[in-house]
Length: 306
Ligand code: HSE
Image (cartoon, rainbow, N blue to C red; front, side, top):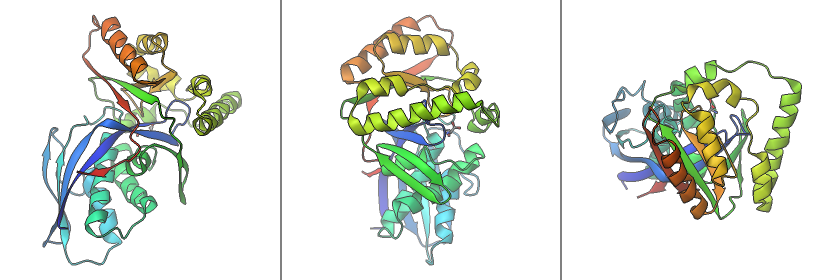
């Protein structure tokens, strides 16, 4: 195989109570990427459709992760990468991660899988770091593993895939403004109050247990972001109204998706997801900003070959 076409999914990081450690992949939203072996050594980004992003291999996240992989290889050829970008950069649903993870996943397939999923996450984190100035794995891990992932540690890397309750659905609302992860991270304090840390770890433990036991009510009581949301909410127009519409429509919980500006909700079943979508559209019909809304089941496969 010399050429491959893949779907690399959008992802929701943090998931309210899991800052930098929890994430899940979406089924319906993602980028398409084409990667082929080339006689020329190195990584060449040949084309990017959809958004105006740098094709410089050393600046583009897909190029940087690909170069990190290339450094671990002893091969006499290179790779050409073409990206059909559907996930808007700076949207908070893992746009950079989809590119960073997609290039290394595709190259690994073309090379007959010399690297493990964990190793791919490590390469992808190098690309992610270019976009966010921080090496976190809560977007790239679910993109590569699929489902819901827990990043127990980044050094050494330890990813724990979590069970996904069958009826779990996600709703995303994306205000069409750009928030840079690096700027959103700069708003965060370097230390937190002990009592908040205690409540935060109780919620995180509760959510992980709820996923293992299919306990939707425990998901509901655990999906709270006490640490991060108070600092980032101001970046997101109509945030409290969005939350209140999601919750009154039956969401189990909601919060900022990644570093924003997208907001996610999780719910039990597609019917409730549809109701949340309808009510968001209705309640925000007079809002002074444009937004996209969509729902998706959880993508249990991660990146797939098309
Ligand atoms: N955990 C990251 C953050 C996700 O919230 O900054 C964004 O890439």
